Image (cartoon, rainbow, N blue to C red; front, side, top):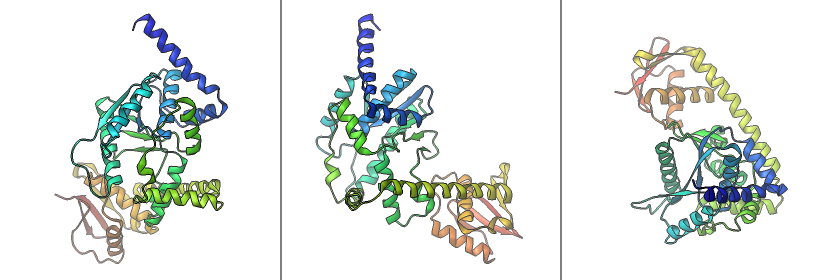
Length: 345
């Protein structure tokens, strides 16, 4: 790189880092940095919203200070007529801050129903695909504290159990494909990210779909705002979620212990042998243990439905399983006092 270009780049970097002199922005960056354990290479998913723009700024600061290699991706779903123009504007704004963003385009037929869920799956597919091509193992997402609360309420309305209610974590591996999803903004409120985005960029995209109450997430978001007006204590809400996560970790401890103590894996035959004590546990521990084992055997990301697995557990416990059963890509059969689980041929 030419000396003049290096000088310009250094000047831009100094202007970026100068924003950390703002106590509020510095506090946000400190939380962001504390939530990251990355030494060199990572990627960032952007959209143009205030959480996304804030994530771009924070990741850029982190990369300058830590001398880390970072890639920025923006998914253009092409669900709105202005989306391509909007994506180019976001890229142009970011470029002024030496943030080079690659646009990933969703081409092909678009769904007529369940739009947000399908779009989310496609977004993750495009993002993780780009990570694989660039040999990157860490992908940062802009989910914040308000998203955590919304996700909890959505899953509560679906009747999710403890695991489902607490599954929106700071760290998660995406579908066991080696890409680690990180949410370093998960402890930061959206209003603080709006402040940061306005202060640094004086810009963020206002997505019109955020006003569309045809989407459940938007209805939940509006409900949260109304509950806050009625005195909802977000700190207590957060404490409740934290306590539930702690309970979930405790259950996971006993699940691992159950698998370790009461099952044996025969690697050459790809078979798990479960002893009679495996099923002498609380139902949630048996259920989760079976899900882990069956997914391991079948090599499927999604397990069989919980209702079906619970029915299987009941059959085993009541000694009513008298033949080989097929479930979730596995064969389950009883031999004397043991249960054998093998892969469906």
